[in-house]
Amino acid sequence: MVSIGELMHPYLKECELAAYGAKTQIEPIARLNLNEFQYDLSPNVVRVLREQAPLGKTYVYLGDKPTTELREKISDYVGVDAENIAIDEALDQVLNRLPRIFISPGDNMVTMSPTYPELGLGTKRAGGREKKVMLEEPDLAMDADKILEAIDNKTKLVFLCSPNNPTSLKIRRDDILKVVENANAVVVVDECYYEYCGETVADVVNEYENLYIMRSFSKGFGLAGTRMAYIISSREGCDAYNRILSGFEFNRFGVFGAMASLDDLDYYRGIWKKVAAEKDRIRTQYEKLGIRVWDSSTSFLFMDISVTGLTSTEVRDFFLEKYRILIRDVPATFPELDKKYISFGVAKPDINNLLISGMKEVTQL
Ligand SMILES: Cc1ncc(COP(=O)(O)O)c(C=O)c1O
Image (cartoon, rainbow, N blue to C red; front, top):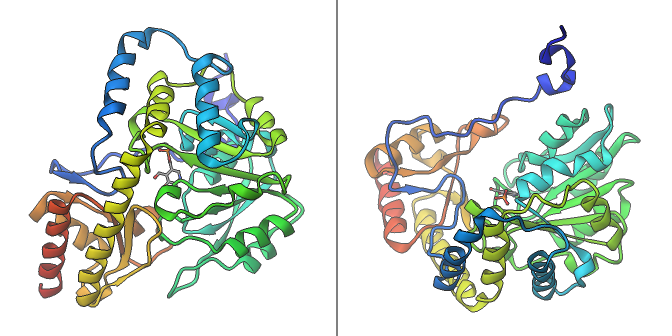
């Protein structure tokens, strides 16, 4: 008899098992390491999610009334036609699935490093290879020419995360378009933090045949737990994506929660403003302490804490042990970085006050 191990694709053996549990005994009062939404969902969204609970026994599927209405609402929000919108259950899932359309064993995808890893992992799972262009210190900004130079005749995908996780920096529109125009490959732009950045290339989606833009309801609308994301692309791009779906993968709560969120945009706009103000407040205080904080276009702050004389792991442990706040030791997931970078999602003012007083203590240790 043959075993699963023998028959499984050899390249899958090189893919690490996903494990993201916090390796700590301390239960945090605020978990800020995953950039989750720290404010409250709109009461209308909560009401709609509750209403849907008894219907949890039934499918929603591609082409039915709810998914069609959701695509229409997203198209109004983005400012494109509904045929330019495809939906799926989460951006992680989109990034994981998309390489199946383009990658055969031996192909590659080009991206900057560090960046959000999921398209690279999806490429590896399809038998492809990642080609990483290191972001250079001290600014860690992307150089479009270096990305273009890394493209070869085996490159099928290029991944640009704007704004980038973990650095919080947006990529200049001209640089994104330079890559899209000159790459002989499909360019995937991850706009997961669009609501905090306000810049997009969605307006040119019908001008380029090699462009996919990805967005999520997790960060701007706080629906991380219901898993809902969408793709903005040409009609052909959306059609190609829908071919890798069964059409039944959608989460009812994600679909209805997303619709209710788009119906309550004023509420969320108010939250995005609050996050921006809190982000500025923390950054100003941290800069007074000599900490270099990047000009974030996201809901989180990324910084270099060398001035404290401690490592990123020590600062993470300090906040967890003293304040029960979990921040991100960035090099723990991006070992290519020196142990001097941390990040955290912007929280409500009371928790942000602790982040400010805590960092004052850290600099005096
Ligand atoms: C840049 C980026 N893309 C995608 C995701 C995943 O989004 P989703 O919750 O829709 O899977 C994240 C989550 O942190 C992210 O930071």
